[in-house]
Image 1 (cartoon, helix red, strand yellow):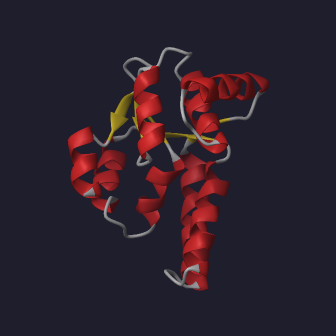
Image 2 (cartoon, helix red, strand yellow):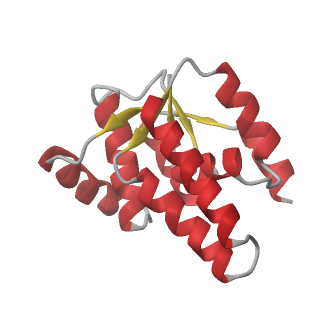
Image 3 (cartoon, helix red, strand yellow):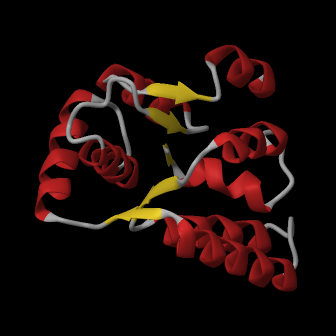
Length: 150
């Protein structure tokens, strides 16, 4: 099982440069783990794409449905006081946005607060760096990430 950041799930729905890479990772994953707020973050991205005329309203509905289908099968880390407290502490150590700190806190809690040996799938540079600093193995591998970003 791997923890999936919202930004890594979006290319499973929408054809983007990382789509092939994240689909390969997903196919090799025994079961996705995600934060409770992940569906909202994905819907936010889809709505932004629609407002920017990158996708149609019909496509947005399809992508929202795909995320809901994924959510039915993933392991979801619920919002707790422990997650909120840990997210606040992570903001002191890493240059993260609030939602990213909540995702990382959920991932750390999922590991029993021992991230070493666990995988974190992420396409956001700052969150990747923070997850790695916390002890996660971050996917896709740095070389693949850099090659797709350039």
